[in-house]
Length: 242
Ligand code: GLP
Image (cartoon, rainbow, N blue to C red; front, top):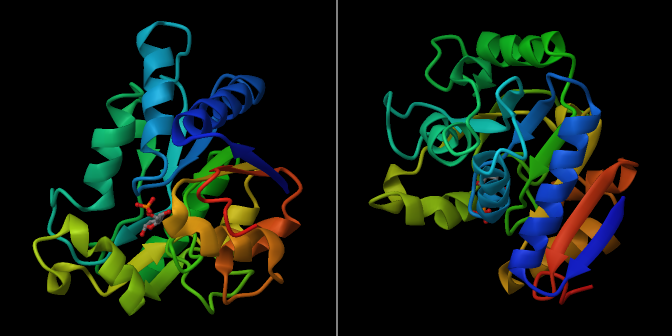
């Protein structure tokens, strides 16, 4: 795992976008990009979108797999990750919507949906580059503390802290779903490369645990210490606990 400290959030976005673009180009005509929701990668997506808009990057043959989805939100709910990915990734990066996958949080059989998601990633040849943010409690995807380091896509219960953190996207904290489908830590670790971005002092504790703490299920992101091709790109505020 490599850690890069940038002077500010814009530099984080530019460096991360350049890394994603390089992997997307290197890994053949149909790169598989793992995409994260949350505010952390938004500037990275904006940087990639600018490259697409200028004609310097074409991702129309890329495949994309989202990390996670809430369970039980109605179809078209603006905060469902299917909608968030459509707004922040599929449209600005001009991806083919038929090649963009999000776990089905409305499936009758959630376990079958989780297994089907793993199958779809495998059928695409695995993820070439996984983009990640990190939750303030160290979660990646929705792998909350105590998640198995070897886990695959499955149903998880959201912690009170994550529901509190994400309440800003909903009318009230009560509206934040209690469960999700998320790729497991084992799924994320299987990506060829991982690029994690974090900005701001609210992430300092999580980044310190990820980078300098023991590898532990209590800080799920710490498993990236075992990923040789993981790059953690942070601004000075997010690095302030190192
Ligand atoms: C969310 C997502 C994660 C994301 C994290 C941080 O709950 N499931 O994939 O990395 O929380 O969000 P943000 O980037 O908005 O701080």
